[in-house]
Image (cartoon, rainbow, N blue to C red):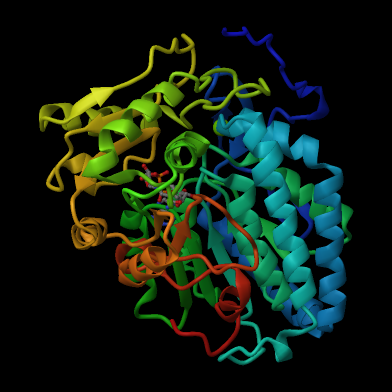
Length: 478
Ligand code: NAI
Ligand code: MG
């Protein structure tokens, strides 16, 4: 028997959105010269007008960050820096509901995820790094404990607040000051975070937020007053940044794309695995760099897994992101939706078989039904390129060696999953896989203490854990 769910919408009255925002420079709001819209991708409603940062806005932010580094932040002990980070973490917890609703409105992700994943993990990153601030000498790092100085940070739209936390928390804990640019479609939680910095009494100029697009990002990358760049986003832009930074003294970390292999061996517990597959690719609409977007199934169990997976996908609830029952929200932008359409059309044209459950999509906004492709070969574009949407490509294998060969046959190397009852099998496979993060009998689990990053075109360096601290200290590899 099927029960109908009544709608359970979260109230949006907890957030106050200004009709227009400026930049946050030197602890104050600075008016922008021109503005662009930030919309709710679930309804196409205009939420606010965001300032388009120019090279001179970036220059002002870098100067104030340098001044704050020289005059206040570098003079504080680690213990004092830690106090600010603890304060920021606690305020984020206190204002968690506000952050969650705002993130869901601006990004399109389900409130269940922003409330239970993005916001608590963001606060956890500040708590974790607050604890390190006065213990850097004891962290066993291969770098010095001296900060770089001013760091430029450019983040994407898939986890706007969480990526801010991944960037800002370690930078401040290690004594750097920051110029951060959020992604153009999702600036609002970064602007709310600026208010948290004010509320926490963070010294002026330690965190500066300049909103804008790729041209603003390029102005940060090319500014001579910046000592280190940290970027998360597409591999194409990552390559541009690597080229721009190569002839300079800037340090660089890059977190780029992925095409994660989720390998299911014949002895895996099928029902749990099906949940893990769903979480691996449909979490956050598949807008996840470490998504398990290639399912690699042992032939002996492929039919059973696919049948159960399809039955499970029929239960995925697509719709209003603010509804607490929603599993799959809106695609973040018209551009991203077009990219998903383009790549899935290539899947059809190249001969793979598309399947989607019978789900109705809202009329307004940007939506894509959860989709799987079977009959995928390694040559297909949907097996090689990052789709960054709720689309799973299914391949099969007969021997463990074939599974590993297919999993590693990718220009990326960010994440992988292994499903098997046998510990020896898991350990063997994890040693063969060329991926930075490997989950066994689970997927998409994150913790601030655990380093995260990729091989090959998935990026350089690690974020999180002790490894992530090193990247913000002098003596780190480029
Ligand atoms: P993108 O890489 O263009 O955007 C990420 C950030 O970089 C944004 O803040 C953007 O304003 C900034 N940016 C753009 N051009 C820049 C430049 N020349 N210099 C400095 N900063 C620049 O990613 P986009 O276009 O939003 O998404 C395209 C594809 O990239 C997606 O379909 C997905 O496959 C991949 N992607 C991967 C992400 C990841 O977490 N690995 C995150 C976002 C996108
Ligand atoms: Mg938006």
